[in-house]
Image (cartoon, rainbow, N blue to C red; front, side, top):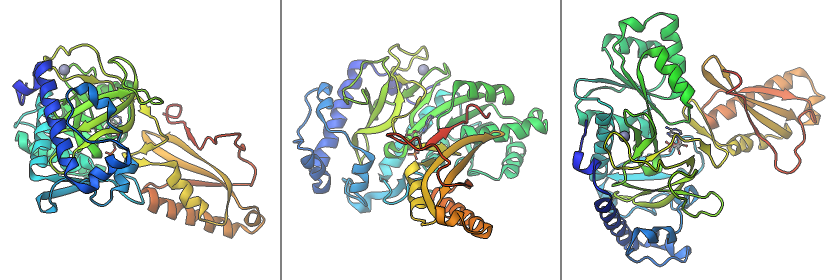
Length: 432
Ligand code: AMP
Ligand code: ZN
C-alpha cells in the first residue's frame, strides 16, 4: 500500500531534479542567514546554486560538533515565531544538538512516517502502542504524529512499566508496537513465560533507535509470531522516518525526496558507489526551519544497488552495522565513554585506569565499570570503599541515566594500555 504513490515511485530523473531544486532552495536560505552562512565561510566554501547533484560532494560536511557550536539557534533559517517544536539528541550532555521544526516541518515529518506505516500495511484499523520514550527523544512524538495522521488509534504509552504495557496490549487489542529491540527482548520473554501470546492481537513491531542483528529480529518474530520492521532515523534528520523497511524486509528505503543520501569512505570522506560499505552521510533537504546538508551520521551501512521488488524507487540502505565512533547504546540511551570518564576523573579517589564492560542479564543490557581506586584509598578501610562505590554509582546514573554496576579494584590490576586504551569491552553477544 502506498501513502503517496507518485512520490514513492518517482522516476530517477524527476527525483534528481526535485532534489537539486530543494538543495538549492536550502542553500539560498542558508546564505541569507548570517549565523549559518558564517559556518560555510569558516570552511572556506562559497555558497552558490549547484548546477548538478555531482557538486554535492564539494560541500563541506556538517558534524555534531558543528551543531553544538551553533547552539542554541545558529542554524535556524526561519524566524523563531514560525517554530512550533524543538527536539534534541538523546543521551548527550554538555551542549545538546537542537533541531527546530516549523508547522510545515512537523506536517511533512508526519507524512513521511505515515508513508512508512502505510508501506508495511498499517491502516486506520490498527491500534498503535508507542513504547518509546516521549519528550526530547524523537521516537515518541515522531511516530505518534505519523500514526495519528494515518488514522490509527495511538496509545502513547512511553517506555517502561512493563506490567502496564502488557495490560494495554491485551485490553486495547494493540496490533502494532514501536519499541527498542532490547526492551522487546525483555517484554517478549515475559509474554512467553506467562504464555500470554494467544490472547493478543499483535502483528507488527517497529524497531529502531539502537543497532540490532538479523538474528534478534528472527528470534523476536518467532517468539511473538509477528513481523519486526527495522526503522532508522536520527534527531538531526528529524528522527524516525528517514529510512524504513518495506515488507520485503531487506534494507530500508530512504525517502530521497526529503533526504539526500551518500555513503562515504570513513577516512577520505569521498562518496562510494552503491553496494560499498561506508559512513552514511545525510542531508535534510526539505526542512523549512533547519536544513542540514551533508551530516556525518557515523553510522556504517551500504546502499543496495538493485531496485526493490515492492515498486518504490527510493534506494535502500542496509541494516546499520555499527558506528565509526565509540558511542554505545544501552536500552535506547546513547552513551559516550567520555561521559563516564568525565565523571570518574573528577573524583580524586579514583585511580588512573578503568574499563567499561557491556553484557546481558537475561535480555536486558547491563553496564559495569571496573575502576582502579587511588592507592591511598585502597589502603584505607572498607567503609570508604563502600561510600566511594555509592558516590560513583549515583554520579554515573545522573550522567548517563543508566544504573551501572561498579567494581572497585586494586590499583594496577587492570591491564595497562599500550598506545590507545581499550575502554569498552562489549560482551553482549557472548552473554545472551
Ligand atoms: P538519536 O539522534 O538520539 O535518535 O540517535 C540516532 C542514532 O541511533 C543513529 O545515528 C544510530 O546510530 C542509532 N539508530 C537509530 N535507529 C537505528 C536502527 N534502526 N539501527 C541501528 N541504529 C539505529
Ligand atoms: Zn521496497
